Image (cartoon, rainbow, N blue to C red; front, top):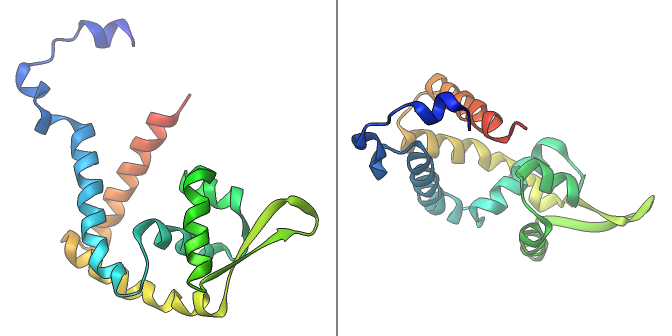
Length: 153
């Protein structure tokens, strides 16, 4: 922490829970999960499973490690997600013939066929958010900058 930040007096009003940026982000993330649940229930996915499917719909076959990096998930969290998606017939997993240590994840025909649901899901969330596409893009860009600042070393 820099001396400049330490010297600055912060008014008591700004120390209240509802004034904290971290709490606003935290509470909003929970609200997003609650908003997504009934929408994703219709297509048989949980929110984390939906994120995995988005990555695969965009990129195709990927090693488990790459999916984890894309979603910022460790293998202990990702492996059970992948197992449930495989049991649902949406993905397949196989060892990489070039490197047996790696597992490659690919969409099944059923999983690839679900990609058409993205428009419905995004439209429903857009309606729930109450923002147009430009406003959502602006919010997303600001949050991505915030995340980049927080993870910069």
